[in-house]
Length: 140
Image (tube, rainbow, N blue to C red):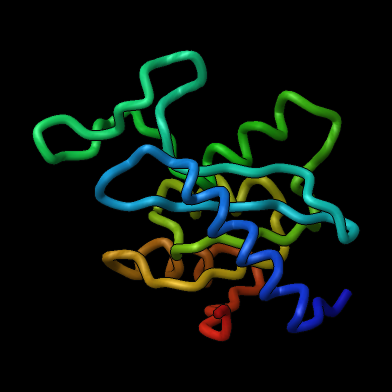
């Protein structure tokens, strides 16, 4: 199914709004998963559920912080939805670990606005995945 430009903009705007919920100081990232024109999961970077949501210590991101993509994908495990053939909209390109989760979850399209500090996650998706990657800079 072809996603129209206005819907891409809307989905990326929603991802940005969820990113604003993150308490991270260094980088706030938001992500949504859409299937059959419906948001089935959301995520933003933060600590595991039920724990203090302080993401940094001494100016460095804590290793236990969940990335937005991982948060959205793992939330699917708690419901009846599946990431198979879904679209993911994220404010940033994925890191390598999140790219592996995207590959394994069956996501078919990955839209993102900003590059990450490196392109290793995008390169992994290109190398191993059947994921259509769209760097979308048209979001307002």
